[in-house]
Amino acid sequence: MNLRDMPTFELYSKDPEEPVWQVPATGAARFNWEYDDGRDRLLALYQKGKDKQWDGQKRIDWELEVDPYDPLGTPDEAMSLYGTRHWAKMTERDKGELRRHYASWQFSQFLHGEQGAMICAARIVESVPDLDAKFYSATQTMDEARHAEIYGRFLHEKIGLLYPINDNLQALLGDTLRDSRWDMPYLGMQVLIEGLALAAFGMIRDTTDKPLPKQILAYVMQDEARHVAFGRMALRDYYRQLTDAELREREEFVIEGCYLMRDRLRGVEVLENFGIPRAEAEAYSEQSEFLALFRKLLFSRIVPCVKDIGLWGKRLQQAYVDMGVLEMGDSDLDLLMSEDEEIAERLDAERFAVEERERVAEVQGAIEAGQRG
Image (tube, rainbow, N blue to C red):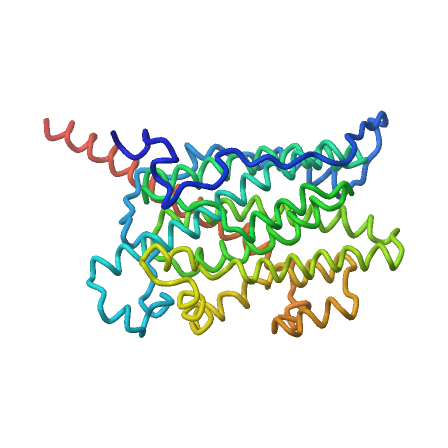
């Protein structure tokens, strides 16, 4: 049986605690009978969401080979065990297995996060009061389904190993989905989880020299740029109407969520699979200079977005000071998003140019062979 045909549960590093995770639904489903009204910016984004749909089976070149023991081209220095007594004892095969597990852990969290995004987008369709937002979120639900399909395929076919959802990511997803207020799936998913994912995707996209993961991440990020724009538009409009007390409640949610996200990014589960006790694994992760930089840069998309939608109270700013990321509030989010779009389009152009050259060469070869004959 090849990896593609194997059930997912046979590929997990350990069995998920809950084969089916059930989160009780709260809040109201809202219908809107006004069909000829809507915000021009949001309707334009909805049109873009329709125009930019794509097929992950066709746009991505799945024939590209991936070495499961070095799927991302990760340098030794980026491994949290690098320079430790454990690293000194590892063979090259052990190091390759460690790279495989780290890549699996990262992409597994991407996969689980995309399923969470799909469910949150569907929840927005159900609960948001405005029809223009329902329309756009319906396109996002399809986007997130495509992303989960793609990450699942990459893990099944190219790496052959998955990790269960990280506890902190699951906690934030649960908090987001259990809240009855209709704006919370926007805030938890579109701003926090999507913002963090975008930064993680971008760091790997810009540093890997492996063509298949670079393609996957670039194309997924092209979609995610629209999703974050959607969250910003909808929440910025809504939060202008809230009282100071209501804004502070949402800031508390952001603060707690950001700490959860920061603490998620350790990959301690990977080191535990290599027989390292949890406390020791956490210490190695905290001491890693590369991981510290990685965790800081992951907030490059969240902080400016939080500021942009109007959540910027003193307690929230102090939390960002404590995390060392306050200065990221001045980042140009629109520029980052436009660059994400351009990188995906450039990859497409390069790939199509290569295919066109190959077709021309094939035709020319056939002509020359005919002339010789």
